[in-house]
Length: 399
Image (cartoon, rainbow, N blue to C red; front, side, top):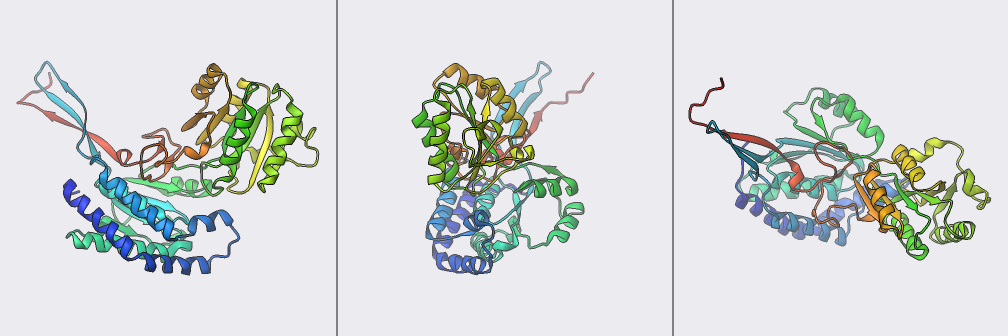
């Protein structure tokens, strides 16, 4: 793959900034076609589908942020000079061609493409059928920006395949694929892992947990819970499960207070057997499998834990490995929790809603990886490169 100079990449991004602003009305009009065709039976997906002036401004800002970042390609990672005279440099390099499969969110068409392109990768965008008009218009904008700077449209391609066609493509791709990022639920991830012939980087489910330790500041805790649960229910970093230490002072009264607070925010509160003794009017969970589920809805579970170790065990058993929070005034307990919880992001006294590229200082993100290879957490510009070794010699042979 040809390596592009930073200057030409940034010129494309500047063109894209201008085009997004110029084509604002056309983008919103295309999105209206998608919204009008959507049945609204999935409120979280509908929320993610919406493109308005604020969303277009966000797209423009994402491109600006990536344009301002250092080119991640050909950066030295390490160097070693051997006694035999070999000079070995490890440097960053593009993956090659990345395919991302995602649903609903047209802004991914901007964020994924801008990151892949700046990191010198080609990208295949397999958006959901519910956003087809929005995505076509946005990719047309990309192609115009590329053409204005003398580059081929193949750098950024929209794929409009159905499920069967996607399966066939994954099994026998018509072009070389180096990395696939399925950004969606467990069924999508399983589908891609089953059929893909190249590396797959998982952008997994949320199903995020919050544990209330026995010494937690209760007012602070309620504030964090409400934000994490209700701020944006369609986000993968939204809160789903709340575990409360059964040794929390005034346990029953605080349970009732939390229940009323969540109900006042239109959140349906399901409870485990222990909590149901206090919140007897709430729906009791009947199947433990629900602890594995990501809700993407105004719904949560409130359960108990028999202290810190029990909470850690439950979270590591059921969570999606995305984000977990402990509410405590005990710094040692917080550190133990953060060390032992197996999640991409662990928090002390803060909302899970901060697991986001922009909020974590990464900028635009391709996805939130719950994989452990090659990166975990927000996939920003630097994370869309791999590496290779440059070895310089003068006739050395191995003996």
